[in-house]
Structures are given as structure tokens and as C-alpha cells.
Amino acid sequence: MKKIARFVFETAYGPFVAWCCTALLLFAAYAISPPLGRFGTAMVNMMFVVQVLAAIAWLIALFISLNEREWLRALGQFLLGIAGLFLFGLGLAFAFVAHGVVAHATSSGYAEVRSANVTNETAVLEFAVEYRPAHPFLAEYDKTIVFKSGKRIGVWMDTGGAGPFAVYRLPTGEYYLVDGLKHDFIRNDYRVNITNETVEMMCDKTWVNIPEGTIKVVGGGNDSISVETADGEKRADGRMPVGDSLKGRSYLGLLYPSGRFDPGEGDPFADIIEPKWKIVKLAGGEVPFSLECKRWKGSHCYRLAFASGARIALGSENCIGEAGYSLYVLEDRRYHLFNAGQKDVSWRNEWRIDATGESVEVMFKDHWGKYGDLWVKIPPGATSGSGGFSIGGGENGKPLSVSIDVDTEGGKVTGHDFTPVGETLANEKFIGTFHPPDDEPRSKSRKRERK
Image (cartoon, rainbow, N blue to C red; front, side, top):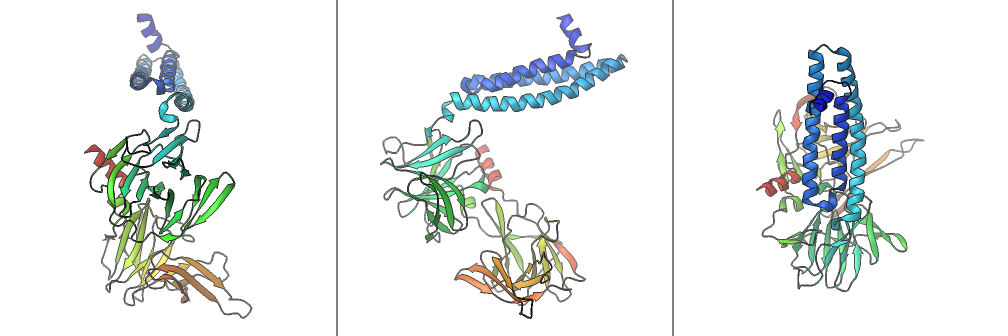
């Protein structure tokens, strides 16, 4: 034992050998842990502790060498320590791949699994969600909704691990599924009709019917999806507005890929599914309007609210992180608002606000220098941001024509009012910054779990 201790603490390469040996044991334990269950997890934890002890022994050996003024030995231990960290990184990557391959090949959790039976004898639900691994070792799963008749309709794959579905019952008798509550920014929602055996996917404000024979959904937009079928890729468009179709739903519980269904009461995820508009505080001053925010699938959506109650949505870029919106006052008593998180001025979203006239203009940026930057008025009541610009003319004697399309409660509206930006932003004064609220749904769900 003394010889081993002397080898580890008083030679240049002793700590390196101890580190590599314990790392090898750690990686081996991790790679073979999936089929061993709890014992495998305990073994990995034990080897991790041993690896930490090897690191401490390395530091003690370096301290001994420096204390004994063995400079060459200390230098050797330090350089071999750098090499050991590099080899540890390579070994960790290899162990991760090996762990996934072993898990995929041996664990029932990685094999084909249905989340619930399709009969009422053993489950509350009258359909199943089937998970199939889509990758040899990454946590990616193709998911299919299976009906009593055996009819199968593929939905969007799960790329963040086999997450549960939150299940709701609608007054119409249909089921409403909310996917991926652990990572709501890639969440997808579905409406399941067990009578007609159909599945619809929510795309913004529209229900899109997933075509029969769909293997998986591979893409989606505001009101359409792309699906993969045996005959190739197809496209499906929205048919019915979401509107009030989710009103009066009742929460049933969580559906897990392991086949477990946990019934629940109330609606614990209401703040995720139907987020409320909240007033965003302005740090630095007061203004005669307010900025409202709600979170939708990982993004913060913003709109301006005026004294009369009129509201106008801001821009199509609605996810601004933690930077917030910077607000300046102009010489004409209008206000200049822009995304503080975008440092590149040529690409950031900017607005000019007239609180008296209760109107908002969004800046059209002329990146090619053909027209010059323009303020384009957003039509009143915009509910979907600034929409899309159309621009033409302005050359060969033709008058310049600029328009903007937005969605409102009454449908799509086109605005044609615009003015050059010019010197309108000269001598502006900083007021303060609107910061997004701390309403991360994932944090809330973790707090619920801890309770």
C-alpha cells in the first residue's frame, strides 16, 4: 500500500496513471449502466466519487512536489494534468455515445412503447401515444397517435427526450393534448377526435388537420404544416380558427411514455396554455401608454396599450431575451422604442409611438439604399405584429408605394401610410427600459414538482 501511495504522490506520472484508471472505470460504469437500473446508477455515482478523489490526490501530489522544491516533477505533474483533462473530455464523449447505444439496444424504455392502452379496461383514455426511437443514441422519438381501430397518425417528433402529454377533455368530447411541458418553446398542441379518428395540430391561431397516413409532421408555419407520408411529403393548410374551441376544457392528467397515466385535478398549466397579458414595468420613468407582454411557446409577445383601451401588437420579432426594450422621447413628443438586445442597428426592430394619436409606426429598413429608411404606420387593432411589407416604385418618375399587412380581430388589414425616417430621431432623450417579466413556465413547473 505504501508503494502505491509513494507512486501516486511522489512521481511525475503517478497522478496521471491514477486519474486515467479511475476515469476508465467511471466511463465503463456509465456505458453499461442502462440495463443495470438502480445498481448501474449507484455504480456510476460511486465511480464519480472515486474520480473526484483522484483529482484531489493529483492536487496533493503537486503540492508535495512544490513543497519539496522538486520543480521538474511538479512541472511534469502539471503538464500531464493538462493532458489528463483533454483525454477525460474525449473519454466522456465516447462514453456518452456508448451509453446511448447500450441503452437503445437493451432498455425497454428505448424500445417501442405505448403511453396508454386504447381500451377503457386499463386506461382512462380511448387512444394511445406510441413512442419510437428515431436515433441510435440521441433522445429523439417519433410519436404516433393510435386509435382503437388500429388507425395511426404521426405527429411532430420529440427532440428533447420522451416528455409527457398533458391531457384535457373538451366540451365537444374531443381530447386536447399539450406536448413537451418541460420545454414549452418547442411545444406542440393537438386536438384528438376519437369518433372520427382524426388529429389536428394547432398552428398559431388555426387547427390544421393532419392528413390520414401521416408518418410524422416535419414542418409547420402560421396556418399550415408539412407531413411525411408513404407517398412522399405533403402539405396541409388550416381549416378552422382556434378561437374559443379550448374554452371549458377539463384537465385529466399527465400521460407518460412508460404507459403511466396520472389523473389530476384543476388546470395547473393554465399559465402556459392560455398566458395572460401582463403590464411590463418601465425602469426609469413614466409614459402615457403601457407595454403589455405574454409568453407564448417560449417567446415573449408584446403590444402597446393606450389610454382609450386601444392596443397594437409590436413587430414580428417577439422573443427578446433579457435585454428588454429601450425607450426614448423625441423632440415632437413622440417616443422611439427598439429592441435593446439587438446591437446591430441595421437589423433591430424599431417603432415610433404617438401617444396622443394612439398610433404606432414600424421602421422599414432599406438595406440596399434604394428608398431610404421609412416609418410605416401599423393599422389600428393589429394583433399579429407588423406583418409583411410591400414596396415598389420610387424610380423612373414612379411614385413610391409602401404597404403593410397585419392581422386584426376583423381579419387582415393593409395600411399605406408612410414617411421618411430622415432626422426624426435626432436629439432624442433616453427614458428607460422595459424588461420582460420573470414568468418562465419551466421554472414554475419545477417549483410545482418540488412541492
